[in-house]
Image 1 (cartoon, helix red, strand yellow):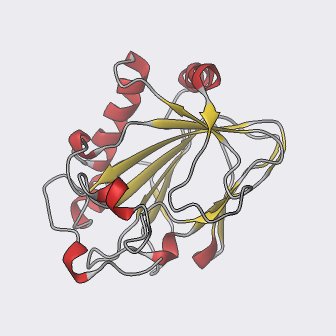
Image 2 (cartoon, rainbow, N blue to C red; image 1 turned 45 degrees about the vertical axis):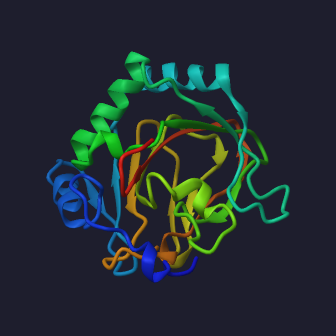
Image 3 (cartoon, rainbow, N blue to C red; image 1 turned 30 degrees about the vertical axis):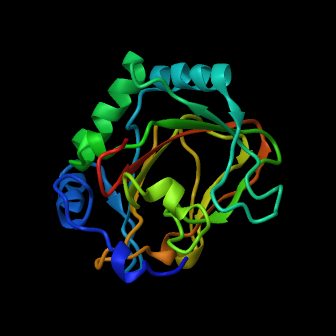
Length: 225
């Protein structure tokens, strides 16, 4: 959670999510969007973005192809991220439809999107407090950012109501978001000057009962791949 080096600033590119104003305008144009009131970060919520039947189908896809989740810049804490991850097939019609809805909402260029992922959390599993951007001074920065650049925006979708636990806590503003099937969260990972925003630190809290399923779509400053 440090500022970008002088030669690593995000450069404006159409559809990249930086600067953020066009994305904010696009999201706010959607009826039902709630913006979390905070000067520290830009965070939006929207309920019922996905229908229950689509959520159930996506959960089944995650169950079918899940694997242990990983992190960049391993910190020696084996329990830092204990969920499972699924790399969703971009050619799957339902996956493509979810991405279409996301880019329609945000106005972001789909070419700047990473491959969409699903995550599953069982009882006791979590992802401890972290940021989605890559630390410019981290050992894995060049590996993950040399082609597509830094992450600009995160869009996360809850696929189910969790029996107990599993909330997302944005620590810098002490905002806790409860899982709710079909609910969307979207936030800007960068400050207005294009440097990483440490106030986006968030914790996928432990599931205490049941299962938790989410989908995550990240966007980059340059086209993916």
